[in-house]
Image (cartoon, one colour):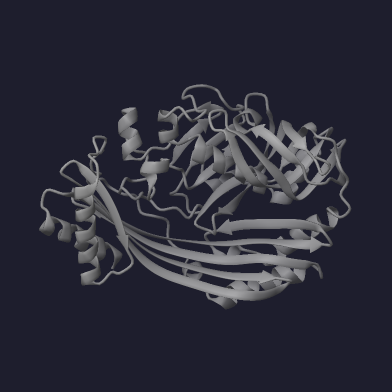
Length: 458
């Protein structure tokens, strides 16, 4: 149905203006959320929307439009409005042209239980979380999302795919102390609310009565939720072809900018990733390595940034990407030996993997989560932000006491630079980003230094 709609819009453009180049993305997205607070479910919401996005280039000018009205009149109106807008737009000399017909790899099979999950299925995970928290106050959400995406353009490229993702993101609270647990998965059946509830409650209890610690540089063990923040800013601001072209990125291809223990890959075709095998320009996606054993090897491109760089698109175009560039949606940090699928490189459960890293620290901090992070200097990717949901002092390989939240000012690439990564955790957790529309796979990390610049006193 979505592919038929995309093809119909292309035909309407041809009929209205045979010389126009057109590309169409049709997406039906079903988002469902079960939210709870004070240990009670207080909201079930669901939204199912079919959107049609049209981009066209005519007479040297480019315009885009969108609509959620998909009947014949609605589609004809979208075409007429976008053609009229193109006539008013300035010339676009950097138009890269359309994606030519290319084969697209089949997406992994969608778990139908996840795609069709009802409120009762999500509520069962919430109940398990609340029960496992053992009487602590809890809050958070369980969500399920499914997409059907189709693409067609006037050059003859077409593709269609489905995907689905489930996520749980919740806290337990002991007085003023919070503990968090979060994860995403392509199979709702794998989302164990009891495991996450126990983990969040244990963190909350261990965070009670935090003490102030002087700012300074500390060795750290970052849990996967904190590492996810590093990955998101590295991808948005670093491995972004537009940012590299504009010299706003730290990335230097072919240079060992990271520790040899670090590899970063984008793998939308892995069954555990929940990705789509093509982008909004119809370019097929593939597994792409951005960092290979510490060496920066690639950046993400859409067709526009690829043309400026004299290379090919990597399949990372997004709606509105002309403004902000191409961004990896399925980024994963792996141990440097990489190989095989994501499941093959997973080791012991997350808690055991973190404990193994903590045991090797002489004096440092265990950090559960970062939040409110903001980029101070895009070129060096210096970021400021706060810790959240649990910070603990480590002494002689043992967590000894909770610490009050700290502010940090830290270059993310420097923190992962040569000789800065002391160990990569053996278990990677899929962490949801942005209300379950994307997810990055992150392990825990043991880093030699993290620059904490403030505490509760200032």
